[in-house]
Image (cartoon, rainbow, N blue to C red; front, side, top):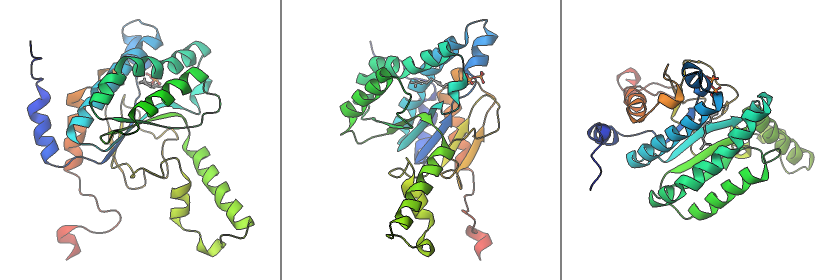
Length: 255
Ligand code: FPP
């Protein structure tokens, strides 16, 4: 029997026609509170959050989004209890072993940005396999930010530039924004057009500080495990009403 057409389908056609953000970045927050509300262990919230990752990836792919970056683990998240960290490190494996065939069918290409250092080998191996299996896919890039920290990334870019100056291959006067941009883990990706953070927290938590300079922000009270297709469409519809000026003037104002 054919699957019933989901209610959001019609709405998503209209959203796709109106032009979707090329790159959406998401700070997936509120898993712990979702679990607490149900008297469940925090990790149950992370597990439920994984199901949201599937829904959001699928819809983003159908809408024609080019890149979806998901903040799955920050360089600061190591401060959490070991049991929770261990659980989070198993999630990419579970997600990819369950949904890789679906991602391949969707023409999704899996990517990762973050420091390999300190990540367990089973986590790295799961991502490596998924990257390999999807490397020729030409649709949505699903970019997991895993053991990612923006300040550390910027420091690395600066060290790179300093090394070039020390080697005499770059003059200080010739350093431009592009030198930093090129030194970041996102060098092959467009800058995010839309940043979403769930759960009512209104901060960036060391996420893509350089790349978000002209990004539109959408904060929602919805906890990540409750965030679904309708919630993603709400965010994109709101984005479509924004007047992006990139520091200049647009339309009437420019005359
Ligand atoms: C923040 O919520 C969430 C995280 C640190 C982990 C995010 C990870 C997932 C949503 C699953 C990722 C799935 C894959 C496939 C990698 P929190 O625990 O800080 O929530 P709280 O603020 O309510 O405590």
